[in-house]
Length: 263
Image (spheres, rainbow, N blue to C red):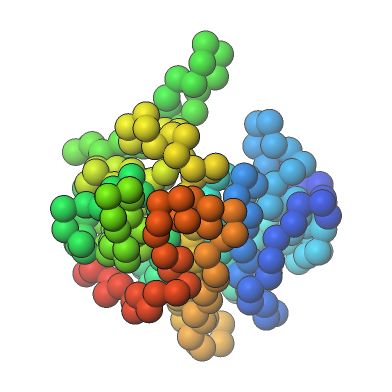
């Protein structure tokens, strides 16, 4: 996991929603097309820049050693919830929970088609690679590889028809682009994905049709259960309507049973 550089410029124009807040932790909802942390080409317009506009003193105190509070990341095109720590105790505790796979993450994905099985567990290792974007630049991507790191994703089909499918995915591990790569593997590439899946999916949505809609964990400081859910994003509802698929907000999907952690 890349660490942000030592100086972060606050930018109040970067918007986000706070879904949970206490002295040690935040759970925020990141809009699509917002990069999580500063990097090449995005020094001042990331989620972390926006967070510094509201929580600068706390995040600055955590410093680069604790990623200025960023416990995990979401892809630029992916919307949804993620945890940000405000104290060292909160950061260290959440990192331990992620490493022990005790944080449950759930995603909604609008996909090219339904897989053969309406629910299941995908256990295929994932390796990172640099993929040439054009003559001068490369981008980081992922692929299924026997030499990669263990990756496990549970999924269930919430709704489907001849036009597409609405899938809930629960990644147990946290590999690069894991949900996208695993769903593509079973023939259910996420619409709007410019890296994975057949060409037909790339312009099938206004953006990557992937939303991290729920986080569940035991608070590392208070011990209380934290269960944060969000609504389906407005900007993807047109895609659902075009495919004649219901919004997951109108479905009672229950909760995926997390698969056992691989040894």
